[in-house]
Length: 244
Image (tube, rainbow, N blue to C red):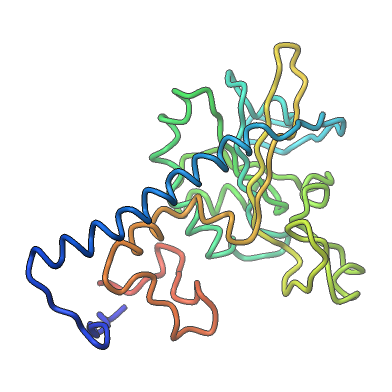
């Protein structure tokens, strides 16, 4: 992708170091307030009630058929990326792949905090493995093909739902352009092996997995997406970008 010429803000304000510091301290107060609010919301998130998972989901994995409980490995907490990759697709969603590009470096650190991770999609396991190897990912990628996991957690929609003009996504009835949707779900497993659903997020909530975005927001251009038809139009599978 060719470099985009930099356009400074209009009007561009140039200050001396003391003026810059005063403006920075004003912004810092706002940033600290946001951090405190984020901490408060995180406490409320952890205080949500749990829902027992009664459905005996069985996933196709490289180690054979496995239950949801087996996705935890030795951990008591599990994060699931609901990955948009339906049966018959040539490749996974590029935006979900952008999310997935951020996972491998976090796996070891998550494990130290008693957290396992797995990506789940409806495509057959052979297609998931082919795509995972192409992308060079090492995280677990399992198939929910043949069970209702995606539908039950609100990230896959039937033809009848799509033809009605709206679906239940992100806890509201709304139009949605695709039969597959992105999301994140979190589960806990107790000492008896029982699994509980503790949290899910959708829509812009999934940006928590995209730490490229917070880094971009530190820069003068920010996300720089206003010119596109939709925000993530610039994203490609990482092996499909033009050489920088």
